[in-house]
Length: 270
Image 1 (tube, one colour):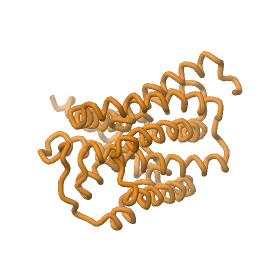
Image 2 (cartoon, helix red, strand yellow):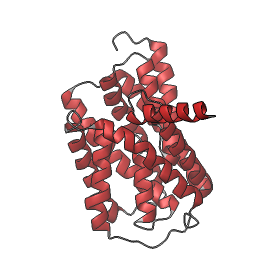
Image 3 (cartoon, one colour):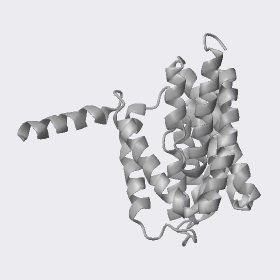
């Protein structure tokens, strides 16, 4: 456990519980987990690696809860999960040479667009819609690509899976949430395997938070299934906006300086 004290591990376990609850409904649990790990004293690489361990518990927990409710089409979902798993491993392997600053600049914009779509689209409901692409095409493009993104960067993965399931495969928001958790688990586990062999996972903290994640995800999935689109849709919009703001405020984000210069220019003109 290193220099991390027992009470810190307990607090991180509670953070994992809250993150798991939010993640099971709308994604974005990493917004709580990763900063908490950094505050606890873990270096960035160890924090990201440990986050993969604890979040795997949450996504697995949520996926099993939705599976028990018969919300997952296993025949269609398993190949997609396999593609997400492979994509995440590839993304984690290439994380050191990928231009992550480009992703950091693009992701806030995409998250805001996702939030706007779920906010204004009248077609997002409990019933679902019409598929625009085949399941095979989705597997080879969206599942693989978003899995790759999760392996090398991460924020917003669940939101991107969600909008893919809803807009491209025509799933209801409830079934889209269920399938998202399965693919999220697959990509989390793929990244975790890489980091396990490459080193950097704090097992004690990861398992402690993982227990919290598992419990929180069970509770979150029950709330989501009880309330359906009524709670998933607004929470998804909020999570996407918060993630976008969080990424834009990061000093390492290249868009931050551009935005600050724009604000300075506008205030100066006034």
